[in-house]
Image (cartoon, rainbow, N blue to C red; front, side):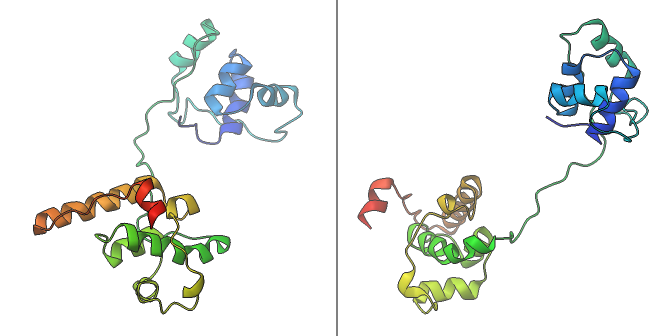
Length: 192
């Protein structure tokens, strides 16, 4: 659910200016009802100036009045005309703790998904073509310790991203007239 802009300040305004229940305010602002009650008691959010959601086109006054009349009703946020942020494409930041797992994930992708191009593997794993080539040729500085492991389980990419990338690679192979390799199954993973 999308939350209003500045939820605590919005909660302060709703507490001061409306007769909504703590539960209604909490659900609208994405807070716990006890936190809203603490704001009302003055224990939390002292000095926060209320943010008017009506004046800022986040909710209508008619919607507030409707919810004041029915304690079971819930406020609905107005749709915004602002563009929604999109997930950035390209390389992702890999935490230092997971960087040593990256060659294992690359080896897994090279072994189980040969249809993926180096560019696709690099995009999934957030690495360079040079590193992929070193893992492939076993010339990586740590090649003796590289064990192919699923990058999804390692947390280096999501299952959705992997599936989308493999689907795109399979479509490319079909367009070029090549046979599409069979997807690995848990039985073939254990045998390899």
